[in-house]
Length: 196
Image (cartoon, rainbow, N blue to C red; front, top):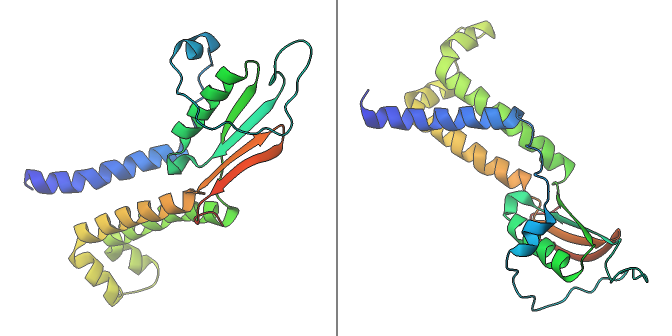
């Protein structure tokens, strides 16, 4: 094998192994928040203020003390940056406010299908690589004709299966939602057509 073939074979295998590891690895714990460091950083200027319907004001402190803001966003849609920016702006404007960031999960059928896609990917890759041993164990003396067409171009079949499966999985894991709640009351909801 020359270097190009080795690279073209090694890259999908590396991506496959890293996806398998990430699939079964728990999410890392959230880092502790240090309010002194977040206040020392320069904050962007707000051009539009948010209207919070249930702001609590007490004689002890200013507006926002004791209020809880929940920001639910689609992490696979790259909305995390927007959510962190809004969190920093709210904590600067309303000291004492509690802002909670969370991922807005897709619907249950999409979540279940996104868990099935890697299994199908591994199954197709396994059939392409070891079909002549798998089919006899399933009771087929000769593999079906479609197996030979897949086997004729192993690398093309494996890479197409892997890339197409990753695109389908990222589509199924995205909800396209960005919602802001103040004390459990919906303030703003932006959803894309992906959210069903």
